[in-house]
Amino acid sequence: MSFREKSAWITFVLVLAVFALWLTNVIRVEFFGLRHGNPMLFAIGLLTIFIVAEIVLHVAIALQSPAEARAPKDERERLIDLKASRVGFYVLAAGAWLSVGSMHIRFNTLFVAQNVMGALFIAELVKLATQIVLYRRDA
Amino acid sequence: MAKTIVNNIRRLRFDRKEMTQQELADTIGVTRQTVNAIELGKYSPSLEVAFRIADVFGLPLDQVFQYEVVKRG
Image (cartoon, chains in turn orange, yellow):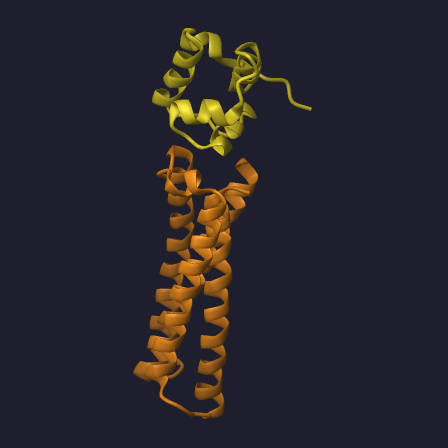
């Protein structure tokens, strides 16, 4: 498995983990009214753990194959990035429209903001999944 | 009949003292995975990379890459 593919897998798993924790919190607050702790601290904590884990795991895989990690992306890898970003964009666009539509379900700024956040998470996950599939299929 | 780009890179590598995919990749500035994808016909390189590959083997482009009808199945 190439360095880029390992990198995509690491980011996919970490984004999925953060998304799951964030979604659990949103469901608890929005549907069950279970508020505890400071939501801003929760968000900052999640982001900090995500960044630290990304750095540590990327350093670990870079140590396994330093030459690959140092090398810039080649044309095939850039094409894979572009294709994956296009797929992710369509998901993000659909999510943005659904978020706007969600105002008809519940006219609440926080609810709409959370839907936009959800769309961002799902779009990123779809982009990373597309990258992984393209790396697997073409290699 | 559909035509596709085929290449002789694998045979040319072996004719060149069994040059590895990694050695070829390092010479032309792409990853080993990209060389593998090109060899297997899963990725068509840019014209620039195609010329760099031909240059490594000291051959004209059409002796490395061909545009042919490929029988499938």
